[in-house]
Length: 169
Ligand SMILES: [Zn+2]
Image 1 (cartoon, rainbow, N blue to C red):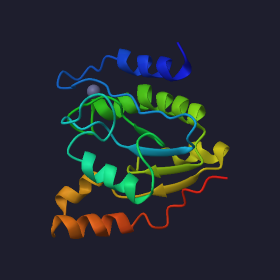
Image 2 (image 1 turned 45 degrees about the horizontal axis):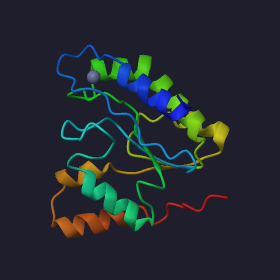
Image 3 (image 1 turned 45 degrees about the vertical axis):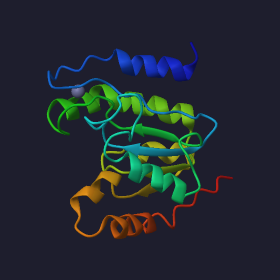
């Protein structure tokens, strides 16, 4: 089993103690790519196969297109891999004990040069050793909670990524 498959397997094996937890979603890895997108945790509406496949799928895919990227050219993960109902209690505990070490394994495997994070929980200091550029942006799902027309909201949102430098030396 190669490193990617082993990592996915280890993520799938974890048993969350929260009885409402729907299961674990590993990251989507393209290890040749030095670009990494990081969300907070899988949506209960996701396909349980890869990140950003719930309600936020279209917005996220639009964002990749906007940046001239695609799911085949970037790494995508969540800091918390299990689908707990809320980012509190068990989820936070799991994050510190289980998911943060997994996240470090992901970073070591990918060695990202550019990281776009949609969560404040991302351990930015862990990027020092890779010299990554770090961008913290609003989560794609946040568009569901803001007023205004769908199109306008998406345009405004995408514009906040204009300065993301995806040129990787
Ligand atoms: Zn869970």
